[in-house]
Image 1: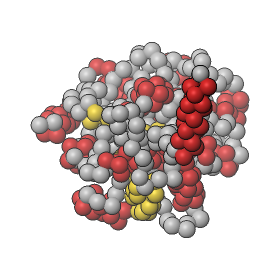
Image 2: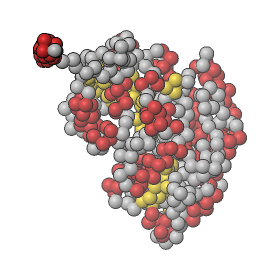
Image 3: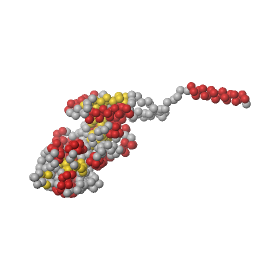
Image 4: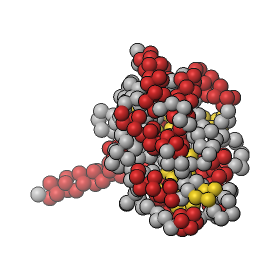
Length: 447
């Protein structure tokens, strides 16, 4: 027994010595974004990767808000992702910038993330330039995005860009004129019907004792400017079918909405005399400086101008038509990722695009959010009651599928809308006239 006890003690000492000399084993590293874990359950270690980000309007060392905010966003991203190095290439919002972007995309190297316009998205997707985002969307992401968020980013059933924000169009009301005329403001919970909207616009259209003419409503409407587009959807009509393959605005729902829009000037006489012929700057001046318009339909970019002018205002939802629910529309900001052979770069690029379009960047970078985001979690734009209403309208958005029609057809479409507003053609006549050529281009694009 004594020998056995001595032997057991030696074994324990030996075990302790082996344990003390053993090399500690590190915990398995997390897989880089987009990389699957190894078959044995361990993940490959994250290797340093460099990506190139093309950003419109960015100037290295620039002191303008866009350059400063971009630099700050990338600084924070790199701090939170130490294995990813981001090189920013600034390109202007001009034809020169378009050329630089197209050249980089054609070369297929030294570009990984860039701002993409919705008209160019289908072309890039069909050319195989882009990396689809769906594999990089988590279940949390899918639940966070509004249902309408991917309407403009989807081509042939696949999502090709990360939605940044949308310029949700709303109505700006001069509350002084409303008070002067005793017109009660609607609320988001109880918005106007079309008939109520028309009745209010009529009451707000009058001539003051000093001869000043005040109009109830206006919007930038020269050559089909998008600032009155929400009114085109209130009866359930669209320009194109949801898949972007059929021109449908000459169908009853589309014609009905256009008739309503035209009636504001032709029948109800609630618009300025130049309605249908003036640009954005002119109608904003009518609202802001001349104070000759009670309601202006426009984009969120107008809010800072109104606030700077200290003009009392409220934001209203577009009226409800035959569709029976709130509707807005607007232009999207989108980030796309280039499809490259190096999947580590591609995964890193998606991680950057995801960050730049998420809710965290809006918290990290003051002033980043210039329009409402498309995620439920991103409430950073809603810093005032006016902005809060615009942000809430986002979930009521109706957007067209991205289709790259020719510039000539786009001009003809704008001219057709203007002819309707000016009473030169009925909505049915203008849309029926345009339909064959519009459909022919769509058919050619979908071959």
